[in-house]
Length: 351
Image 1 (cartoon, rainbow, N blue to C red):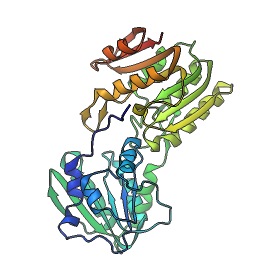
Image 2: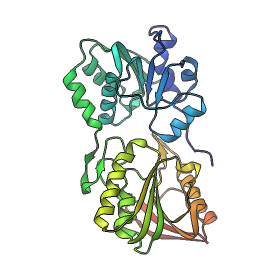
Image 3: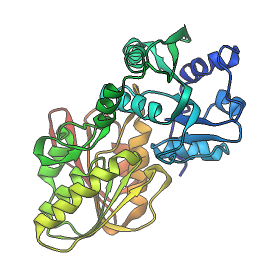
Image 4: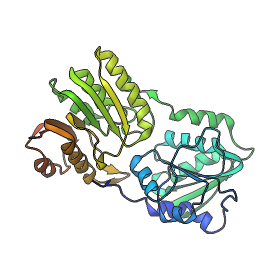
C-alpha cells in the first residue's frame, strides 16, 4: 500500500526559497547546505546540489526525499554549513530547540533561513530568531514569512544553551518520558487512556502498537496483559523512539517477566513486516491542520493484513471518523466496546 501522505505545502516552500530565487541570498560556493525538517518540493529539486544534506525525522517525508534522489541523514555533531534551511514546527519549545541546532551547525558568518505560514506563528518564530542571532531580514509572500540571519558576534550563547535543552526528553504526567512536538507530548492522551482501560487481560503472544508515539499503549499492553510475550512499536516520528524505548523497558521491568520489545521507525501505511496475535492503535487522522481519515483507514488495512487468523485489533478513534465500512470489509467480527468523551473503542477480530 502506498503511503497516504500529502505533498509539502507549496506556499511555505516557495516562500523559503524566495531570497535564493531573487538573488538576495546566494547559495554557498562550496555547496555546503543543511536543510532541517526538509520536505521534497519543486523549489528544493531546482536548487539542491551535491553537498546538500537533508534531515527529516518523519518517515513518510524522509521517504519522499529519497524517492526524489535527495540525500537524507543526520549531520555529524561537528559538521558546519554555510547555509542552514529549516521549516520550524508549530510547537514552540521544539522550534526553539531547532533554531539552536541550526546555530550549532552554522560555520562562522553562515546564514540560517526559515519560512513559517502566517497562521502558524510566523511572527513569533521570527522574533525568536532575532533573539538568538540578532539582526533578521524578512519578506512576506504566499501567506508566509521567510526570514534569515547571520551567525555573527551577536549570537546569544546563554540562550543557545537554554534552547538546545528544550528538546531533551523529560518526565510528564504518569511518569512517562516524552519530548516537545510529539503527539500529546505533555500528557497521557484521553483517547489512548480510554483504550488502555478497556484492553482485555487475555491478549497474548506477539503484539504491535501502530503509531506508538512515546510508547504509552505498548507500556499499558505489557502492564495489563500477562500473556503478551513480545511487542513491536511502529512510529513514523523518529524523535519519539528514544522515549518510547525507555518507557517500554520500564514497563517490562515493572511486569517482572521477559517481553521481547522492538521499536521501528516505520510508515505503517506501507504495511508491516510481521504477523501478530494482537494489535493496538490510536491511529493518526490529520496532518498539520487537515483531517485525513484515509490515514486511519490505512492503519486499519495494515493491521488486517498483519494479524494472524483470529488475531484481534483494538482501536480507539474520534466518534465522527468513518472507519466502520473499512472495518466491516476487513474483519469477520467488529464491535463497539465503548463510546465516551467523543471517542469510540472498537474490537475487530479476523476470521
